[in-house]
Image 1 (cartoon, helix red, strand yellow):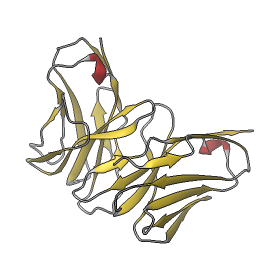
Image 2 (cartoon, chains in turn green, red):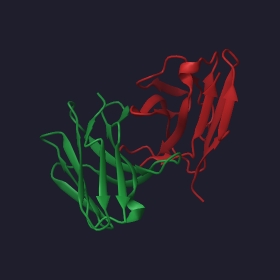
Image 3 (spheres, chains in turn red, green):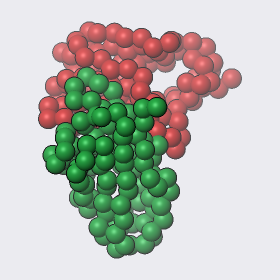
Length: 109
Length: 113
C-alpha cells in the first residue's frame, strides 16, 4: 500500500528542473508532499485533493491525477536549498497514512 | 509557537529495557501518529489516534504500544525493545480534517544494543 516514488535519486545542477513521481495502487483521497533534510523532521510542501489539481509553492508545484492515482512534483530552476529527500504521502480511507520511500535530490553548484 | 515536542532526541538502550518516547502538541489537534524511518523504507506509520482513548494500528505496530489519555500527549512505549527497533522515530499531529498537513516533531534517534 506504500506509494511508489521515482526516481530514487537525482542530481541536478543549480537552475535545472526536476520531476518526482508518486503512484499508488489504491484510490487516493489526497496526496501530501514533504521535504526532509538529513536527520531533521519532514517539512510540509503542499497537499493536493482533487483530480487534476495543481498547486504551487515558490518554484515548486505539483499535480494530482485522481484517475491514475498519480502525483508529480515539479521543481523548476533548482536552488542549492532544494537538496534533500522528498516524500509523497497518501491518506487512504480510515486515516491510515502511507509515505513513499523517498527521492533523494542533490543540487550542485 | 505551534509545535510538536518529542523527547528525548537521542536514546541508547539495551535489549529488553522498557522505554517511553514522549510526544506533546500545543495545537489542540485531534489526530496524532507515530512513524519510524529506516534507510530505503521511508516513513512507516506505527500507530495513530483520532482522539482521546481512540488508537489504531498503522502499518508496523508490532512491538509498540501507545496511549492517548490526554488530547495533547501521545507517548510511544517499547515494553521490550529489540535491536530491530533501532530507528529514527517521528511523532506528528494534525487537525480533525483529512486535508490538513501533518506537523512533525524533531525526531528521536533510538539505538537498541
